[in-house]
Image (cartoon, rainbow, N blue to C red):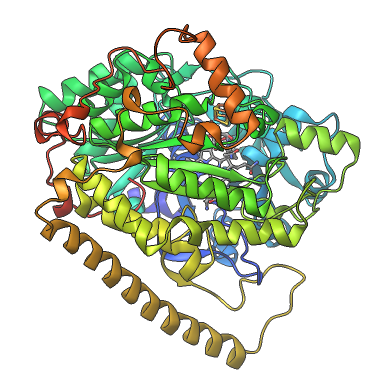
Length: 635
Ligand code: B12
Ligand code: SF4
């Protein structure tokens, strides 16, 4: 009886594919192990599984859900077509979380599927951003619709079921526009989740989820506020606990909380309190990486609770140190007078910091960028710095303004990966701008500065063995792979036939000879750079005075001299910003002399030599068993 049911049973085949994008030669960027599972995929996969378990399409039409991330899995469209045909054509391919730089690849994946009559729907930041900001649907999205690709703008939480029901009837609409209604994500039954098999295709044992969406600020280059809104929507502490427990049960204990600004998640404290309970009472040693803004240290308890909640790494949107640039980008919340206080606070609790730095703001020149980076190295107690090219990303105010004015922007969306220059700059030629981006990595990650970062970390109680892989990753990605660390992975996979449409297939001899030579070169450079970094770490560990290391960046803010630090004096905009902050803080004529305004309650223990006495750090430090765990470069 069961056998006969199986033989005649047709099942709805749902494939969810997170696409990658093309490198400069037109090959898909793909790895044996990519950095991290995609939260966009986790979110849609879990909703789809929920629909399958709830028998959304009725008791006679079960749903099979398959997820794949093209950054670590080759997408074989012919197999997908075969599987759907076997089920009487009942199926759908969802192309998930498509960023602008992934849009051309996403369309290339969809093309053969559409030719075979398979239904395809595509969602993510590119389509959502364009529909949120532009008066008309841009040509590339229209062309995709002409291929019969259905476009889904907005979030899937309240709209996926409708798409599945339409697809089961074979009646997908060309456009699903949910941009006007941002769903509540507080208590949804199926929060983001990916099974272990999937996570094993990435480095370390890490997964990701969003505890909230939306950010209150208004940076003009930002897409998030126009796609996810400026109001904070957040998952309940119960829902976060559910996500953590589901992963804990499958042995996954490390998480990247993908909120662009977790400090502005209105419920951060309730979420932290729950995680602290899980860690301190229930023995769940979960660890996190979060993203925050440069004023997070002013939120009472935020930094101390981050430490207790198991945050080991924090990404900060520093963006620039020239106030003129920050004002031009409407990033007024970034105050250079707060940078050092904020970074020292993270150092105080032993949490590794990463900062994003954008190159190509209006006042930037190759010389000013070089100069700014030297100031950062000398005066900011920062661990990793990562660079981005200022890009008018579809969905941002910058893009909308240029689009409406008809200003030239590169029509090739594959280049909108914040690593390519796609529009003009008032002071730099395209070559100068590209050159400034390429050389920024080398300027920051010199051998000397790598040692300084390790020394500062060691003196601050940070586990330098767990810092080492991260430092390696961020200092080496561009040098070895000519690719951003956030896109890098372990062992590049390249398939001759997976080349961008319109580009010729290379001869096997040329292709494989170059691929093999490239692998050999990379293995040699990786080994050399790793050995070198290890020798730095060993040197610092062997130095009996390393704990007493001290430099200008580690100077407590209360003791620093705003008259001599270049961060505050390098140009008119910096001096004006310092003056304004002093006035606001009521420091003008307050007897603080040339000192930068100090945060309330900051420990100015300069008498200890470096203000980083072991007692302070022993109390604050995490259990340092991290080096025994599989390390991820990001979390
Ligand atoms: C986390 C993150 C990453 C992680 C990715 C891994 C991970 N853990 O998820 C890391 C750090 C590795 C990363 C890298 C990069 N990222 Co990123 N990243 C993000 C971030 C902060 C969160 C993504 C997320 O989880 N969002 C929440 C999910 C649930 O939202 P969503 O993706 O929009 O999906 C929802 C809807 O769109 C919809 N949906 C999506 N697809 C589909 C499909 C169907 C069929 C349906 C029905 C619905 C639907 O439903 C989903 C659930 O509601 C976003 C910003 C943001 N707030 O989204 C940037 C963002 C996506 N990244 C961006 C960029 C540019 C990059 C990089 C190219 C940067 C670089 N050069 O290295 C790389 C690319 C690497 C790669 N191959 O993906 C840009 C893309 C902008 C654009 N217009 O294209 C964003 C928007 C940030 C920004 N600067 O504006 N990123
Ligand atoms: S702080 Fe970050 S997320 Fe918020 S608006 Fe600015 S760039 Fe966007």
